[in-house]
Length: 395
Ligand SMILES: Cc1cc2nc3c(=O)[nH]c(=O)nc-3n(C[C@H](O)[C@H](O)[C@H](O)COP(=O)(O)OP(=O)(O)OC[C@H]3O[C@@H](n4cnc5c(N)ncnc54)[C@H](O)[C@@H]3O)c2cc1C
Image (cartoon, rainbow, N blue to C red; front, side, top):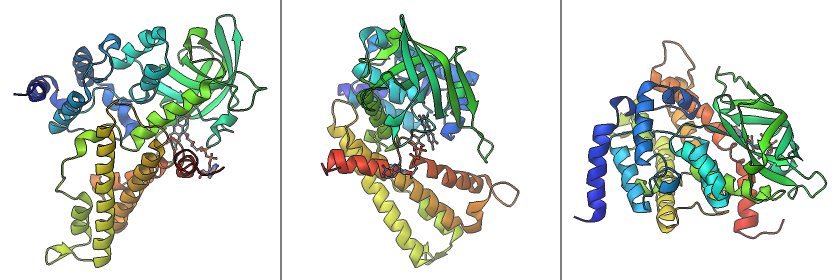
């Protein structure tokens, strides 16, 4: 038996014994993640996985990670998928600031911040966007002034996802207002539990508040929580965005999706809502749309799997990540729209007895899918990056 087969067997046994039933077969939207993780059963699962280092399976053991090779991490992911185990922890710590600190953090910063990401006890949020700085992120104005061994920060962030549940924020702040706009920015980490930070959830028409306005009013970041050099935060901030886009674009965990999936949920939906004729979807126009969408999704899945497998370093690629963000988010939006269209009036329900839970979920998914092509940088911004940084086109 090869080492990898032995690892698979051990992992399968361990997961069967240790993953609580209540953490299997869960489906939830990211906006509701805090509810899923605030339960006793989630706590048990988190502690067990953290003890194995499997919340961050490929990170170094020294920081609380699992120290697994890429191949072992793929096996773990496949085995978790087999029993439909929910990730023991999730969020921006694991997907954004953790990988960024591994690349740019000082040894002291890694020791200080990575273990609490690896054991899932600290939640992070992203302080990038401001009322006057979204796509043009480098226009940000939140001002940080050095006083002794700390930064005093004043300004406002907006659309800060999960700020109301977060313990720490990574933020881009302006430390030199006289420098050209990309050169006076620093990347800092700050504690959300302090007087200088206040958050105001932004209520949506749906009743949920996935993101907040975050006010920094003499907020403090310790000098030791400056990542990289003073005024050189822009390139670190951009690298973090590549990690974010990599997750949105389906590169994270893509390596285990190579197997051929025989079911086609969109076709099944069409059979139910459009009807069948001789075992085929009754409407030829829908057959064509579904075929095109399914083939494009399959091709995209195979491409993400290939890119992840070719990239042995385990790191996300550079500017090409924008291609995956653009294509992945567009496909997700189109898939949700097609499902909603196929369901007709049943795909437009918000509440009431006339709709079953799957139909109500489809409406919400369709509306939420609009956001994927905005957060992490809009589609237009991704196209600009691809044009400039991948294709080398002139400004
Ligand atoms: C669900 C959700 C969660 C979010 N979470 C966070 C978060 O946690 N932290 C955070 O910091 N931010 C977050 N954001 C903010 C997000 O990053 C911004 O919304 C995004 O960068 C766009 O900025 P904007 O909303 O200011 O739009 P704008 O920049 O005003 O853009 C408006 C329109 O103009 C287009 N446009 C702008 N500039 C160009 C250009 N140069 N070329 C072509 N077209 C252009 C855009 O594509 C867009 O269609 C979140 C957003 C959403 C929707």
